[in-house]
Length: 125
Image 1: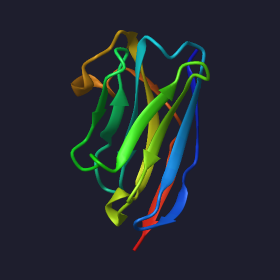
Image 2: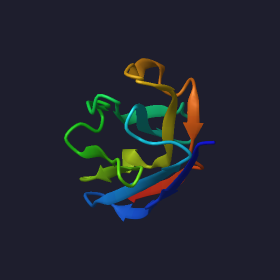
Image 3: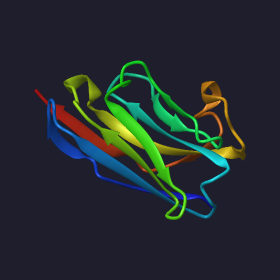
Image 4: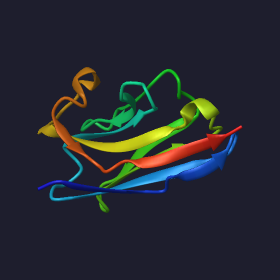
């Protein structure tokens, strides 16, 4: 029932900015955790940022101070604002919606939920 549609990926130069969007349909945004994962070639998929039902946010250490996750409940859309991007940020980025209402544990994000199709972000040096 949950469909996630991503947009905003592409090619950007190091130091530049990019904004990813994920529009969710099938359920409301407010009481479910949402997040962004990324997966680089040969590496495991990792959580980049999350916004919880409590409106608290989480950011991986590698992106703190550079990436910002936000949500618009009225539009059922979550965003990832990527600033000061680095070549190491190159990956396929996936939108994620947790399957459990009131989810607040980012350590289990990605185990049960819904995924977008992924969008490629490439950062050139």
